[in-house]
Length: 300
Image (cartoon, rainbow, N blue to C red; front, side):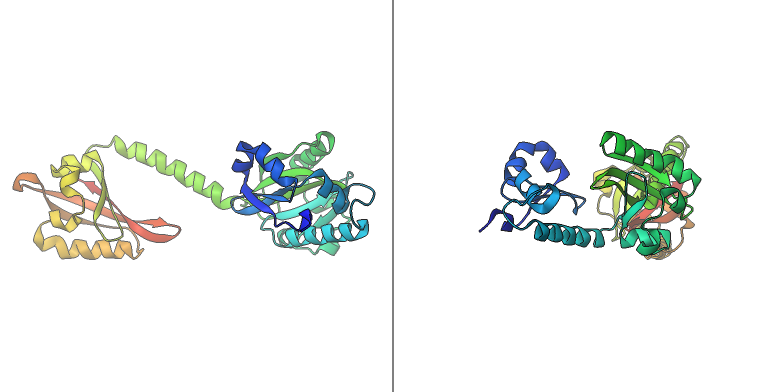
């Protein structure tokens, strides 16, 4: 078997960083595909295979034209299956290639985009930021990553990776809107949690998908008088006055179905047989958009 017929090895960027020397040896006998979040990002090959693929002048081992055609076909196949929007430009920042994702992003076909100047494709705000990064990569040969608000699709945010590319420079655009919004929601949730923590007579508990107590804060334990081991695996309705259990059970079930948050008064049966009337609110906890539990807040 020829070395170039050996199936490519695959590993994550973290693995190749930790064991670069080992994977460098592997690349001598076959290509090494480096993945990021499971998707191929770069390929490490030996100098011999690099030359054989047609990136260096002169035939090395087999027909150079055939190697170039194979390399171009492989490159087109990779670009066609990428989730990122791809654009390549020459040193004058004129577009030389795009993929289908970039066509969708711009709402124009490759035939309309190829040959156009960068400043004809994106408006002034994007030119100032991204155009300068293209020129910097052309000058230094380094790879740059940054985030930019979309000027094509308002309200969206993109992660941009600019890197050297044969014949000039190229960039990948990844939609980071959901990540940005998630970070914002997490920041707001952290601030809300900090604010609620200093409010008196407010306690919280978490129910799992079966409606069983799965998490309790210190205020909830003080409110009920029980310890966490005593309440673990109990249903919230177990410590509510019997006449109110059906109404609470139905409210929990609605929350587990993903319905809107609700509130209702209940009487807790706290430790030593005492009763304590509180008002509680229930809200659905979701994981990947699917109901995964219920957050319960208690106000005495």
